[in-house]
Image 1 (cartoon, rainbow, N blue to C red):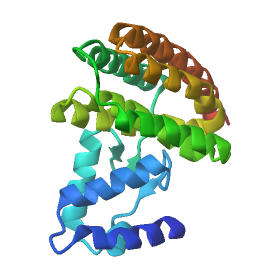
Image 2 (image 1 turned 180 degrees about the horizontal axis):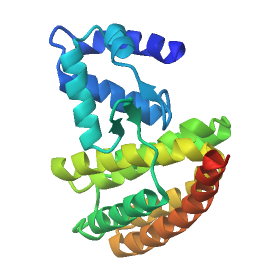
Image 3 (image 1 turned 45 degrees about the vertical axis):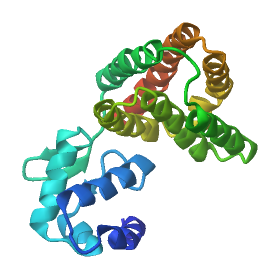
Image 4 (image 1 turned 180 degrees about the vertical axis):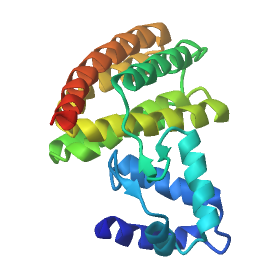
Length: 233
């Protein structure tokens, strides 16, 4: 916990002069997504509030916002914890992803499409593979899907999927095998990009639908085993 708090102290400058619960929740959401606070970690009001230099009321409001996003859970008489997803949660996250991401791609309209950021995310993942930086590869893969969603040009959809992707990272941190989770999909990311560059949104949507179904099967297989191991006596 000391290392995590040191990192949070460095985030203090991000709050500026007006320390709002929204800004605090943004910082904590990023830290949770990055794995600084793994699933199951108890979050200390005193320690985190002190590291960020915010009041207890501000921090509690930030906790409330993140609980609403299903990243945290409050346990009576025990405190606030980073949520540990169930297998059913993971399956529901993928259902949401399939509904939203595939609909975005199918609804793109006439080409050409603004694919610069999507291409950058693909290149980011490929460079991470060259560097054998598997955690960075996982982050790049999330960036790829976030940029796919951004093609819709909808702030509401972006906000919805920001929370979904943050929840998804909770599952990835439990699995803790980013190479196995993400490396097989690098080539598929590149292929979806090429298909969109060719103007074939229907083909890209079909490829994405299969991609997400395969990813769900792989993640659930490993996640179920890891959750079972962690709960075994």
